[in-house]
Image (cartoon, rainbow, N blue to C red; front, side):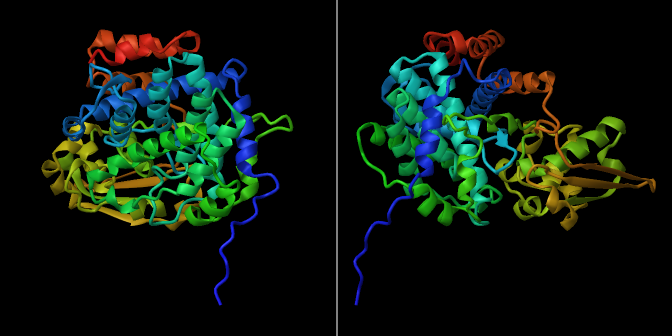
Amino acid sequence: MSERLTPPAPPASPASEVLARAVAATEWASAPGAVRTKVLELVTDSLAVIAGGAAHDTMTRLRQATPSAPGPATAIACREGVDTMSAVLLNGAAITVLQRQDGYAHAKGHPASQLLPPLLAVAERRGLSGEQLLTAFVGGYEVAARVGVALGGVPEHLHDIGNWVTIGVSAATASLLSDRDERTIAAAIDGASSLALSFDRFTTAAGATMHHLYPASAGLVALNVAQGAVAGLSALPGSLERFYGPHLGKELRTDRLTEGIDAAGRFDRYEVLDGYLKLHPSCAHLHGVNDAVAALLARTALREDDVESVDVGIFGDGFRIDASDPQNDLAARFSVGATVAAAIVHGRLDDDGLADLEPLRPLMARITVRHDPAMDDLAPEGRPGRVTVRLRDGRTLVEEVVHPRGTPRVPATEDDRMAKVLDLLGRCYDDRATERIIDAVVALPDAVTLGDLTASLRNS
């Protein structure tokens, strides 16, 4: 005999309520100085990453194929304002094109770059201040990071993009739309949890550019959930613990969802401080290898013709995503062989070097990539890689990197950060506009509106 399906009883104290209370209590002005500095760095970096992606031909075609109505929101590389949904779609899709988006040390994902498109569009639509935008950004990042850690990773077949970060984006967007109403934020957290977005991990290494719609789709869902919560649509409390975590996580630890929140209901530990910047145009799993090759090039006069063979040892997750025979520049960014060959052939690893793979293939044929199990315990905080180059004159060069540049253990220098920002913004903007964008982000905490920033972003 069939049994009636009845909704489960919610937990006595759902994590969504605790997290929502902390988001509502977040104040930009009272956040530690290191947090405010890091957030402004992440916002600047994310804008640059979106601009660099927007200049790619895939995004040019997407803009041409996307009908948008005139509106109050800014889509990078568009001079005129567009409707909110189009801005979230176009800015979100550009995030992953160059694989330069931010990351978080304790869980695989990209909180900052996914937060920015919906928050920017909503803040523009509502005429909000820079401080309101930044306050929501901090709260959303903290929610997302705690969910990411509590999941214990995601199943092997799922991509981290558009996964746990979506819950933090929903919380942050609901905070902006509701003027930090706790009940609305909690409903957005549980609402996003009940949707449980999941995307195919293997599209990227295959070079399938539909991948770029993952963060865009997640941003649109987050915005819709937040708007639904503001409208009074209800969510089932406890959806995060009961449904999302068990189905989209590897090993849910519910106690970790609310770690770092004090007795007064405020964040007293800021996970955003463990966010990192990507200094290579490749999957973060390859950055130990990429840094190792860069170090070899910096201390030797290594040339392609000198190389007899290259042996690369890498940790398990890096090996599993390795695209051994990439056919386009997206797949190349997930290829150990392509990124190593590009660096050696061109003297450095950059986007231009991955655009044409044919000059790289002779050297790629001499590169062996293998899983080194001894490196597995060093991830995910480390992205270890060892590169051994055997030269035709009999010498052997070896370099190993565990913690790549840009990560919390080896933070990006100001020169590193600015070189990346100037390069990527420069693909859509001239020098003067680039300078105005950077200055406008610095001035955001005191900006009554986002007008200076968005006017600069429309000056492409």
